[in-house]
Image (cartoon, rainbow, N blue to C red; front, side):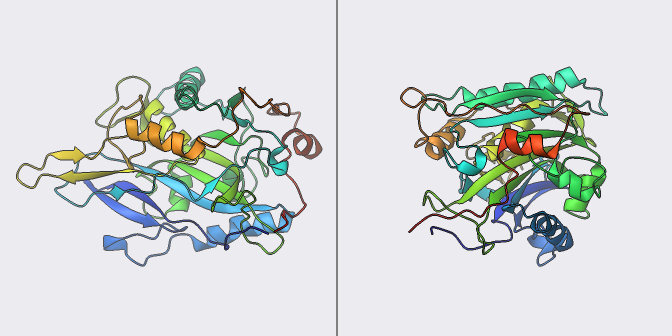
Length: 354
């Protein structure tokens, strides 16, 4: 059996606007922080709670990583980010039997408003524009299948944190945007920094009977089960311009969708000591922090996407197998229906002959 060793969370790099200074922090679930926060664990109990709940349910996937995205804001003079990974430590497997045996990647969006005044239609339009931007990259043809919007309260991460009062205890798509949550949700993820995280993407990956993440296709990455995106409602979200204290939703959604599509952070930010001017090398959507509106992908973003998805079966010579699931609406959710519709809530162990 091809497998990789069980990990708590892959290492990623995140940025926060900390009291006017951008600082980089390395994340190993619990958001292990560098600099002033070196060696400080954040929420290992939540890590255990999440995966413990999955183990108790018999699910064959576990939390693999949580990527957080910070606001750039007003910068100090030095110490920014320098990321070169570009690719996530997990990726979807085409025709994966535990995702229904299909080659498409399904996604959905929870209709939600923001405290800053955006309507559900406005947030939906911005998020859909972000997803369509990635889907339009040529010559890649995944395809991304839009299941439409839903008023169902989505999110396994939210379900566990809320004690089962919000969200869902199972996935409904490969990627889903699970709405705008209060600062307290993000504070639970990283105590002390709930007001500095713009959004987060939780990545869940399949495991075998021994609890190890599987690697069925031998690409050296854990086999992705699903990803869910959450936005911090504490920020002043806008759909035009942005900058200052305003955060452009489409820009953030474009970044989080990149994580959903197996991209990691990339790029370097540094200051010229003489004048404090900030430089990006290069400035890209997948930089570790928001630096203002950026609704178009940079060349490095496109190159990274093509690198990750370049070997994906192309629709021009392979038929689309399977039928996209329909996201359930409130009042018509049943565990059996979701199991059949998505093939994600499964209780058999994954294996592959050597």
